[in-house]
Length: 283
Length: 245
View 1 (cartoon, each protein chain N blue to C red):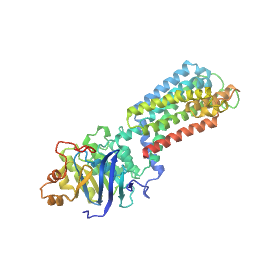
View 2 (cartoon, rainbow over the protein chains, first blue to last red):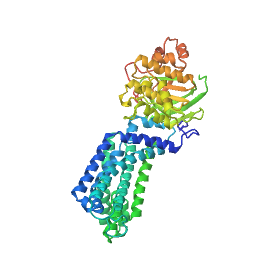
View 3 (cartoon, rainbow over the protein chains, first blue to last red):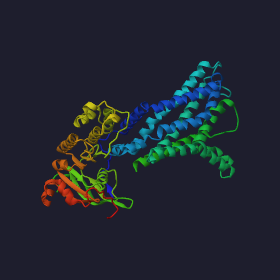
View 4 (cartoon, helix red, strand yellow):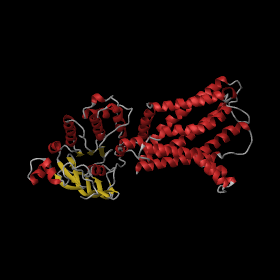
């Protein structure tokens, strides 16, 4: 069995950057024109600003606000990220557009990376708007004199909040990649929703419970706990925030995460999920 | 049988969905500048054969080989039920596809004019009728000027005038040197338009040749009579492949 008519790379084919730009542009337009994404951003903004207000974060400063927001964002960011990604590839597949795209000189890798980049831009905006609103509110209402450089213990700083924001975005991008993988593997909207819920439960509870189980059963040694935590995106995110943001200001204490290994965990989940999506689109 | 240079050939190809054999030992070639029409009862394997030829399915056995010139896009494809991402205008949709072959808005507009839809350029794709969506799909299939264009039931669900228009577009494409492969149930239009007819029944090619030659061979007046002589399924029944009767 062979097929030599499948679309090969031709000398006249557009460059990868051109193809990526085309797909990213299409995804960005889709995000901008989808009301659901505005609603998600507004809901996230309401929660973030509401918690900042109720928790007294406006007066207390950036770091207390980051601590207040950490747990809600652990729950909400994955939900928003899944909403951005779970139908991204599936919808094209259901309309038959993936078949049509197969006859164009674009590879599954270029298509998946383009879709991911376009949706990622929308997700970053959806996370940035609420957090920038909170940061601006703190900046306007906080009465303390702030140190710009959080280089020593006890200092509150917008840079700590910026670090928290960047880590939250990275966490969202990891979950988006997982959602994209799900979107490429399923064949119907119901199964996409079902698998997304399973993935969310695994992300939010399953991996942490597995680590706790591993610890209690002696499967995970105490001295390798930090590395085990890095394997769960949620634990890696929490550990990164605590280690690089909260611990900086709160002083010495036990190490709660290995930042390098946690970032490696993020990268492994993202690259692995995108590889699954590329394989699935190309099969 | 084919007088023109073959651009696509399929050799001893089978296609199985699990244990169900959908295509059985298909061998033929498709020449440049010709319209080849696939006709046959529902479930005879037309769509599967077109998808195999378009490179969307790999044959279980046998081979499909492209023999045409190097092109940015070798094969254009219109699915049986074309659909496009909602929230975009017709022009934006075609611009997206044009951009994938390195072309721009002018190319997209040219494709729209080719199918007579230039006035619908700014209309959202979700606001198009079924017929107009199919025409946008045909315009999409021509993007990149592929040497082979595969159209799965391009006239399905269209009124007689629109069906005729679709076959005229196919004729224009063939006149420009494109090998057009299409499936259709409109035997009258096929009889008038196709250079070659390939009759498929139960996954096998039961007859292949110019409509006039096949009619003469069987001594009948119309392609409908050829069809009725060639296919085993009774009218009003659907042949379910993998189930022998």
